[in-house]
Length: 133
Image (tube, rainbow, N blue to C red; front, side, top):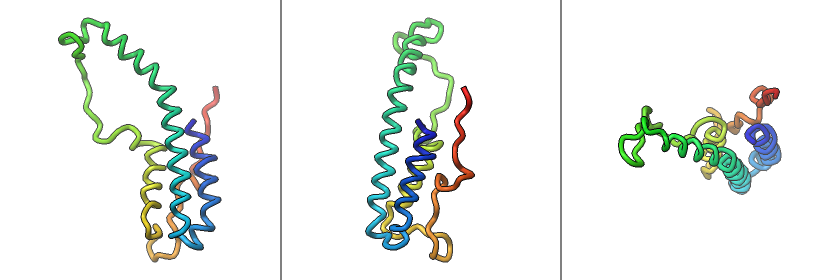
């Protein structure tokens, strides 16, 4: 799910949009950001469909453990809450940061203002390598 999103979908969106972003950023940044946003939403939906059912199963199993319950339906929790939701981290978080950067009507440039900031998924050395089975 995430490997094709990063290596193919986002990289292709950047390579397709880059010439237009350089030529006329104001006109071309919105379609680029829109394409990335749609790809992220589809990936999040797919992840939810894959992760959601097992997560609910684990929760149901934990709810049946009397040693973990303080009272009916109140489970003991031994953790700290993250300051940001999980989607703010990892690959999807990096893509969301890039979407936010390119949502601005002013072109995001490197110091000096001449070159656009290139997303991390555009570089071959940042390509993801799937783990063997």
